[in-house]
Length: 242
Length: 184
Image 1 (cartoon, rainbow over the protein chains, first blue to last red):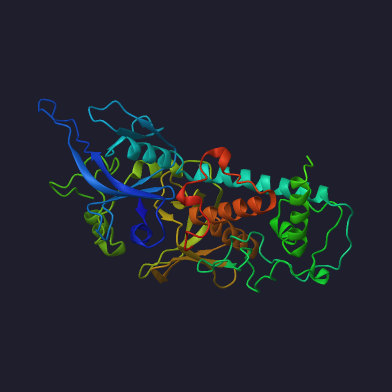
Image 2 (spheres, rainbow over the protein chains, first blue to last red; image 1 turned 30 degrees about the vertical axis):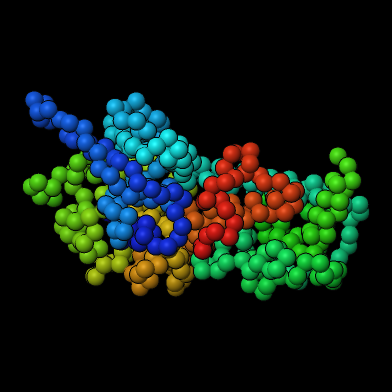
């Protein structure tokens, strides 16, 4: 099966930050067809880099190309009772698949790797994202519930065209204004604190309903209205309201 | 493909036994200078998982003289697998990180990668609607995209509620979820 290896290798070595990196010793797996030969377990020290659900390894830390890759979907990571201390294994569901046995330099390193690797899968990330989506929706709903009365305002001139702000061209970053409020729109944000009711988005009575999973609707909230509501809500919290 | 004597991939290269430089050269694929091993067996297993999206689409690879061919194209996590329509095992896989999805002419979109933007994998759909659906799905398919989404939601929830939603998972300190530490 072909793989776009050059692009994969580029992803491994480009300057996007790694999720974890460090030296590990990996056990060399030998084929066992020479049954009468004594096979010693040997380990090779490699520089490992975790990016997303991909575990790359390099001969040296400075190597410009990875010598190998382990795709981390459908695997479990467990400590193993190898002869080596600080050893752990990446195992796949597939019955015939070999495990990758790796050895860390110490307890802390081993724990950090096991933690990072067991959460590396795309599936896990997707679960967390979906959970946060739900939480954000709920946070919007409870903010709406805190409002004293429904406001009528002119429809928004600040409509977001993107259904998800993360769906930006690769090079674009949100501009962060001095007050820490970041805006994802290419038009730039209005500095928080300047109340201008004319710019507020349209707020129907129940803006967020179960069907409104579409974030273009949610994004019509992100303007002065939300900042004001949040301040209100936080004030009420401080004053000891439930 | 004949194995090169003395170059057996020692168990890390999947059941075929030979990956990397010799295989690449034999296939006339990608310049043949890369010798990166990978767990092909697991990738093949991944190709059999339920897909986010799958369809028969005309596809052309960025190789000289290549033409559009009907393929079963299957999106699973951040990989796009493509199969001959009557085969169970994929011909190939594309990792969808740092790639650009571009709308080309009518019904057509392409996938290219940052370091080689002229090399395009072209896909001709049955309809404009199908084309747009695939473009949207592929743009969302990268791990990096999900990471950006997660960071965004985390930040928004934090702004709204004053609480870090990742704390309950015990992952709030992990580098991958931090705001402002990532370039993209």
